[in-house]
Image 1: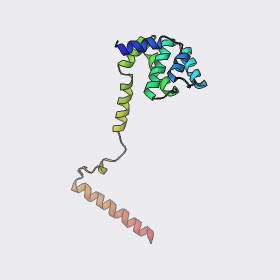
Image 2 (image 1 turned 90 degrees about the horizontal axis):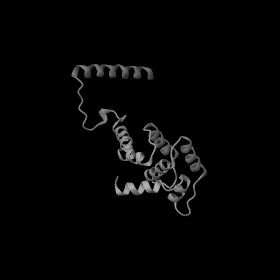
Image 3 (image 1 turned 45 degrees about the vertical axis):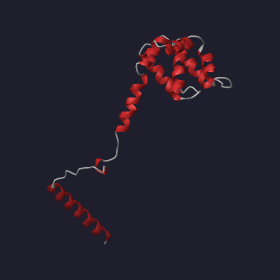
Length: 152
């Protein structure tokens, strides 16, 4: 573990989750009832205090907030439960190995997919054959004739 990771482990192992969260919020910050419920839920799921503190620290850092995001921490807790993480050190190693790389890759893949048709691309190369184009022109002519006939 790096020196920074050792400091993180020491910090997350030193306090109860409610005190850890209060400390993370700083003076003047208050732990909300919903945050207390989140911490209680995590403890009821069987997570050790140090693992809860690690999830809180990571969640606050990733969401750039002083409030615990229920959705984010729930996803993290599900991932930790799936990986059977029972200590802060295991959690830290799992986070280091790329917890967010997976979600970032998924987001990047989602951005690549688009519902914009290919023909709207300025570099689109129309490969319709002359025979197919003639058929399309005939269909267009018939449709226009029907429309004109319907107006009368």
